Length: 203
Image (cartoon, rainbow, N blue to C red; front, side):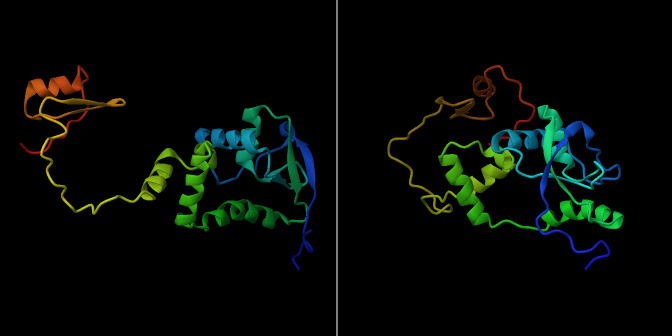
């Protein structure tokens, strides 16, 4: 039993005015504009599923990012849980613990890959999961096995698929079969675009 007594196992939710809530001045956790936008998108999609934790005197203990997101969305009220049973030292420690303990968890990458793949197949916006495009790409690309040994050199076909001078349009990308040391060939490939960096194989 702590100095504050036994904490309630299921504290009740209360609606609180967004304008009345006061962030903790010494909160060491930071929230970028991009992350607040992610939180706002999550609230729009799933609802306000994670209440803000307060100290009983309108002070925010945990949920500073969610409060910023609520303000961004123009919400006037948010769900809160009052932790008035905590001592001042416990409140300050929990501000840190609430953020740090979540960082200690890991991921089962195989299960994560399956979940993301299934959600993508259902047409769900994967950005709402909080993973960025690079993370999602690495996970989903990594799940695709090649059909051949990556070290196996394919046989040269009798009739080549592409010949010097062929220009392939691949979406916004261009691929030219030609000599990278030939100025006219390179100019045709670039089609007037000035590259920031150009890397070629040795001639």
